[in-house]
Length: 363
View 1 (tube, helix red, strand yellow):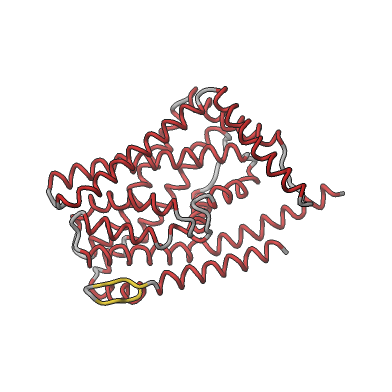
View 2 (view 1 turned 120 degrees about the vertical axis):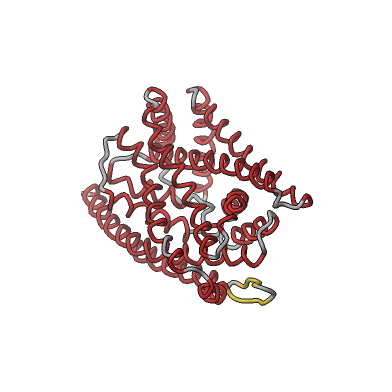
């Protein structure tokens, strides 16, 4: 019954997100239009042959995302997945991240559930998830710094808009500092134990409150300890054999560039290939806005931030708007079409398996 309810909720969320996105209003050349209308109008001016490059570009991007996860698992758990299976799971995770309101945590929760059948623990999944985002964050920060140097050298940013460059630089530096802090925590067992104890106490507090209300919880202290032990073991394995890291780093760098390339392809189709540095800066700021928002995929704030920063860094407002609007519509459409079916199939098959296992345990 639960899986049916979840399927219905997912479909409803997809409909709401699709309607909200397509009907959202934007200003193009002084005229107010919905994002869907603006996309249709823009298609008349875009080079369709260039735009078709988005199909292989998006496929490679999703495959790269999957490789970041499984290149590490192949070495640690000796897990072997076919290219088709790898890409499929990546599409499922991408769909979940774009449709579930969670501030970016839905992908992690889904991945933990999805990889349970492969005997991968929550701690191990969390480690590779953190590793993936750390690699991408570092790659984005480096790209942002390079882009800032380029736009300053070219002189396409007005002095009164230098604040945006400072903001992008501070965000890039802050991300690097955050990752360094995480590294300092995990590199020593006493730090890991301290964090584990604090989270354990917090979980017990909520468990007591739940019991006081007559509710039951599945919290177990040993689960918290096992979770952080798995994190620590994966870190130690990485430290012993640093060669395990190079494949996820390469795939992560490729994925980070392909995320930007999605906007760049649309810009090229409009006849503006020169806006790549501005896209790098805008995406660096907008990604933070999208992460903070709990709306699916940062819907609403992400687009507004991208357009504002692109315009402030020298891109014509109408060009910036069309690039962002067309890209977001194409990405959202592709995400739903490519991931919904796989997600529903995985939900049904895995739920059936868990139901059988639960019945066997009761007996």
